[in-house]
Length: 322
Image 1 (spheres, rainbow, N blue to C red):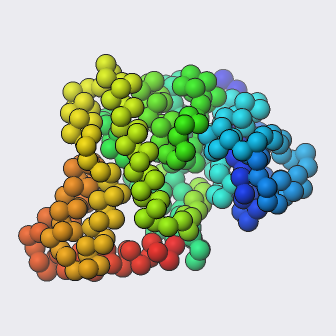
Image 2: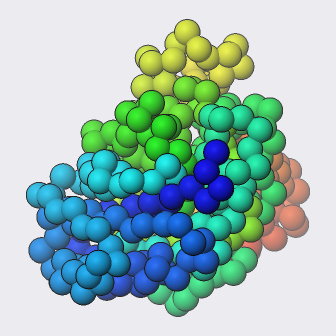
């Protein structure tokens, strides 16, 4: 095994003139010694191309007509030379030890079929939110990981994976306009690839200012598509517990839809409606025990229920500001 395998940081770029320079600069500041940066300009018509070109030979650039995020990532990977692929979107930022720590985690793996997913702080219009991270600080248990992944995306887009995994499962699906990374991780899981967690945040994940309701609706549409794909593609591979789960949630809304309903109910003072929404969210993501606790507190314990309502109103305001 190569001591310091070449890592290709791939960056898909479309209309990202405000953030792409920061993303590329963060890739250039990595402490890991053996890497390259590959940018795919996906039909950008703003100043993104000029900013990318200003880095000269420090980056390799692929240009194509606009084909979407999945196709742009695939094109960048096709042009890359690394044994390992590090994903970086044009609006996110890597902290200097990101690649080095991911490679160290990957090198210590116990199986050849493994990749590393990295935690990140979230940042919004008001800056970094240190107490909010993309992944939990405690990684999920290995046992039952695939079932947990079916319930909710527990893999960060800021991941580092072998090129062999990309080639085996066929890259990112261009038909997935959103949740393309979630689809990718699910296919990897059913192909037998193990997820390794780098739980200490080593990146900054930017939350966009897109309308939350519109975003939830679009995400829900594609999450329902993912559920249908799992039932069709992996019918013979599902365990009894996984099959029971996917059949049970087939006609349900997504967790985020139920959480949005709970937030709205709390803002309007409807505790029981909020409790019902939390209970439904808990049915979709039973691995998240806090959802069931919130439902029970709002339904059965009025004082605690009011405390939960107050906390959720505060969280909703913080989310809106971010």
